[in-house]
Length: 218
Ligand SMILES: NC(=O)c1ccc[n+]([C@@H]2O[C@H](COP(=O)([O-])OP(=O)(O)OC[C@H]3O[C@@H](n4cnc5c(N)ncnc54)[C@H](OP(=O)(O)O)[C@@H]3O)[C@@H](O)[C@H]2O)c1
Image (cartoon, rainbow, N blue to C red; front, side, top):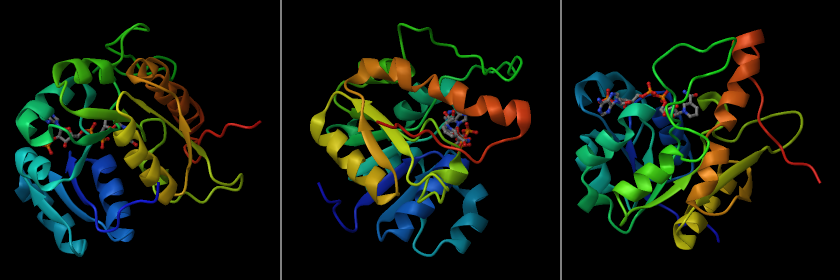
């Protein structure tokens, strides 16, 4: 599937992930609105990004033909509630969140508030059944999300979700952002994808080595 040009994307979140992906969408000719509880704090950022719009979570959700979820894991459900389930009904939501608990890492290992048999994305999908969540961009740092230049070539982006049309839309974004897409199946697969963030962060916390991404070889 080639990606629709001038897609309107509502990003739920204002942190480094939302900002990095927003800049990527703008670079590729799409329109974006960042959603936050406090639009005023993004005035400087907005003034530096030609074409960027900033609004509330609900305004960003309404604006987007699709959305990106990029908020702290423990408040992901609250943020979607603020965005309004009705504003996201039938839309793809590219979910970059991870269920990282508030405690600090132990020997570099991030703590999760979920367990091996349940992912954050499944909780979101259960809570908001009319929205099509697709896990992606959760297992790499924000600095490498858009068109990463790594010696080993394009890295692999794992993604999963229940709705095939939503997955096709996210797959096209993954390709446009310079990654090899790897379809890992339905929502339950987020149980495997979310912990990849623990693995990805380990060399960072242990050796300050953050400039890496996963690649599947055959
Ligand atoms: N940082 C990375 O490199 C990276 C890489 C991959 C995945 N991730 C995941 O991506 C997500 C975003 O990470 P991040 O580092 O960009 O930002 P973050 O600091 O984890 O989250 C910031 C966002 O969370 C929102 N938020 C905080 N408390 C809230 C509440 N009570 N209700 C509603 N929203 C609330 C903030 O909203 P306001 O704008 O209203 O303050 C802000 O938009 C996380 O789940 C993280 O695990 C991060």
